[in-house]
Amino acid sequence: MAERRERSAGKPVIRLRVLRTERITPHMIRVVAGGDGLAAFTPNGFTDAYVKVLFPVPGVEYPEPFDMQTIKAELPREHWPRQRSYTVRYFDAAAGELVIDFVHHGDAGLAGPWAARLEPGDEVMLLGPGGAYAPSPDADWHLLVGDESALPAIAASLEAVPAGAPVRAVLLVEDASEEQPLATKGDAQIRWLHRRAGDDIVAAVRHLEFPPGTVHAFVHGEAGFVRDLRRHLLSERGVAKEWLSISGYWRQGRTDEAWREEKRSFME
Image 1 (tube, rainbow, N blue to C red):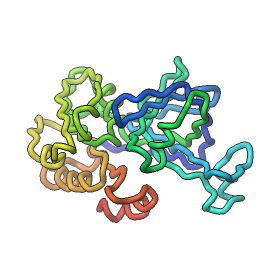
Image 2 (spheres, rainbow, N blue to C red):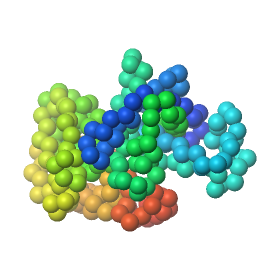
Image 3 (cartoon, rainbow, N blue to C red):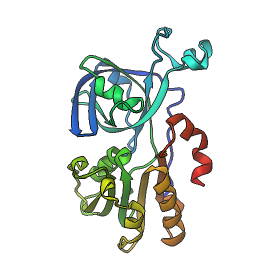
Image 4 (cartoon, rainbow, N blue to C red):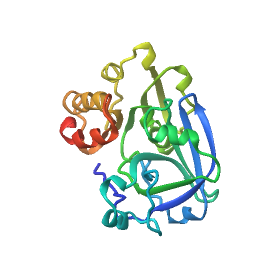
């Protein structure tokens, strides 16, 4: 099944205000945003719909209205806002809410500490959405594999699979405290793995008994296991490329900027 990808380039900046935040697990923070700017957000139907969260450089004055094309044309590169991609956990037009879940591990990184500091009324600026995947109703069954970084997309995908559709989900988190309730109308078997216990997500998928028929697979998360599973699914399981959505969201030991530079060559 061919997928198409929507890009956020050239789209206007969406300016929202924080409505509330919630720590849904010890290391996962839910940010609920809304306001008049939400009218500029157009859902694209993908369960891995993502936005680029913009982080202005402290001390830099930006032209108004805030426009990325103008900023890139008028300001030096080191003054451009930094960007991080995050999946939209859900969008509720009637309630006026857009929800993003952030992984937070103390002071490390950019987005996690920022999300932990947010208060109601704070501004959130986004570009997007982009995306490429939603569970196909034409598949015989669905495979969902990922770590914490992929949980929002996997949770949205579980909610979107057709009623009664077979689903196998293999999810890697730090420990049992990071597990979260997942709703689905599908016939889902969900296996939680714990990093702290030494669980191996690649081995778990390799030993998984596949149901018969065509699988639509979604495998996202840390680049090391994603690359290994890409090879396994394509070469050993015979999954066709058009039925495989796969992406290394991050790589152990690399900053986001460094990972973007080497991502294409690493995943080949």
